[in-house]
Length: 118
Image 1 (tube, rainbow, N blue to C red):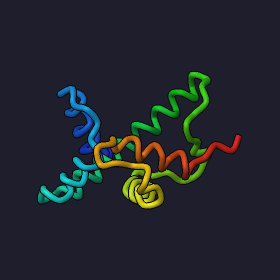
Image 2 (image 1 turned 180 degrees about the horizontal axis):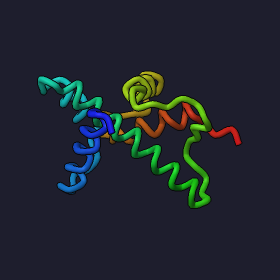
Image 3 (image 1 turned 60 degrees about the vertical axis):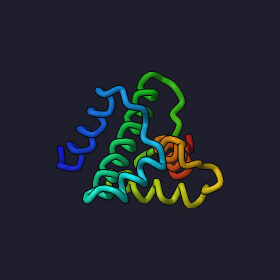
Image 4 (image 1 turned 60 degrees about the horizontal axis):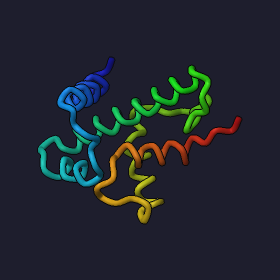
């Protein structure tokens, strides 16, 4: 497991252990701006969200349910998390409010970028 993956996993595990709710768009922006390493921490969080959503889709496929998005052999790497998130926010700026969860944006990005073809 890479250092980034470990950091993202740790961040998500701490949030889950604390019973914290999902981070909002506003909270992610605040984290990026307020902390010395805020941009890196936000990137770790986005990677964790991406990997969590991907695991959720893979789990639903294993259970025979229709997935929300399909990678289908296309490239989807952790390093793509920030660009997917930013692109979704830019394309659909009118659809998202600052208090909405980051997971909602990332889910929308994955649904739009990795549409199921089968």
